[in-house]
Image 1 (cartoon, one colour):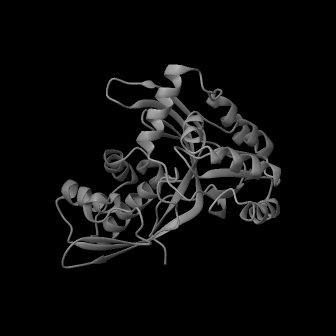
Image 2: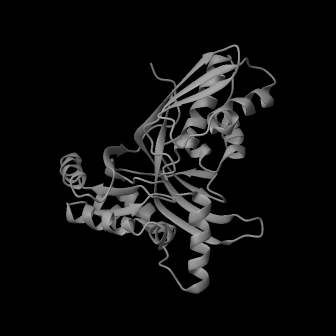
Length: 292
């Protein structure tokens, strides 16, 4: 099983709601960086991960919770052993845990012989986390509400990315709390209208997409990890069209003009000392699916 990492091309964050959430308007973009998830029958359910640093186990892992949720919904299914090989950065703002949950839903449905629709899996996924529905659908989509209500986006372009991975992760609740704090004491930068990004994608112009990149959480992520500003500057100096912090960070996504430019930017950024490591990726990529 594989499910894609995501980049937020546009992320607008509304005020804090009474229920503790924020209304979001996000343009999700799936890229071909994915975890490998193997699901096999077992005597007892388990979740293991390699590498295991920072990843919860058992039903505390979203993949384990997804398998349990599908069993409860359909009242069928036997214990499974879920083995995850992590490639998506942990706590990196690329929805790696949600991708694993999406893979578990699709994989367990196939293993147990459950005839289901993608819509039913999306309903279950939305109960697990706001990013799980998009990990199931992939491609490029607009998410509203908490991000779980999706509408497909017309995109006429393949985008080439360099992903700068940080040595330390960021807690999503901590980043949202920092944004609320920054808004109480000032007016951090806000993204423009989502229609600008949608028009750039429909027009198939990478430079226009680069100009429209924006994330309301970026100021908060930089406040918590000031070194991200250096990473963004280094990426643009190396030849990227533009960069943005993905989601709650700290992964920096640098959009490049083409595959050759991405390779050159990755090589220079890797030696810049501004990030732990780099990955090259392209999108859009498909959602959670059985492979092999």
